[in-house]
Length: 407
Ligand code: NIG
Ligand code: FE
Image (tube, rainbow, N blue to C red):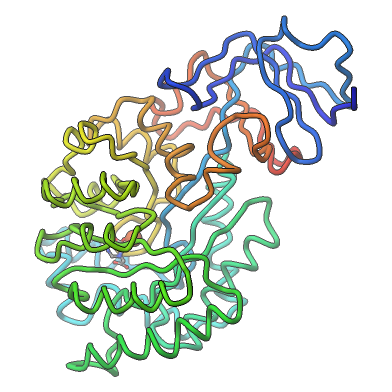
């Protein structure tokens, strides 16, 4: 038999494949060749003739799929700590946004930064995710809101993926907020997004998916739908920020009609919206960092999503306004404590279901033969510990595309 590049022995596996919530396989082994998982099973079933160039003794640690942060605004300049202070004095997120602060403040800072500055500002956030065993990160544009600045954001995201041991998928979020120069002309801005910005950035290979913020302080369902139609014309998958602050838009149901990969936030999701996601097979991406940081009280309808079989993913939403969070482990804890997810559900939400939210479940998100060898070896007695510790990182070893890189 062909030799393997690497063999993990004496490991317990949480595969997130199969019916059991963690997909547990105790006393296992896992082999890697040419960047992919080629064999896994009980150690006692290892083929007798098995040979590997390198062996790693896991000493009873737990091996999980590399973690996936499927919703971030990680590339941006500046921060909004002053806005945080104002909110603590009583101002609401919406009031600040309507007064020209909020997203627009980050737009001003991001427009003023060149590509190199954006990479430099964003790299420490990415490094913190990588240090916690994250191997795939989705990064959105949406703080440029003009062609050249959106391009710089997406190019910075690509550069981060090319220069760090992590897969980056990009999402064009031109419809994030109305830029000041389009005040009172939202339809004109949406036309610019659909007819100019998206096609140009797509041609440059910078766009893997398309997102829009469907909300009364952002874009209407009709404007959101125009963006989805433009994406469909280019055969790009869509996703949506929906039902975060209100149930005014029905954005999730609209996205579902366009076969969305996922709908995100969803605190105010209606029963109809949840049923639409279920029918479309879209993932519900819950963002407990934003819920926590905005001191929201309306919980996303987790029980309803569960009952309908809607896959749930969890992400950091790393952004300067509503979730200045660059710890996916902390997001896991928040998903359990604030949203009452079971730890196995939360972990499936940063592995299998997060891969699905990125349209990458065929090669990422579970430990299965044939998938890419993105893995984390964790120094824990059970996988639940990834959700349990606060501010403690038990990662022992990280593998990215078959290469050991980090921890
Ligand atoms: O995911 N909801 C809209 N967009 C971001 C917040 C962006 C900002 O405030 O800068 C979010 O929460
Ligand atoms: Fe977001």
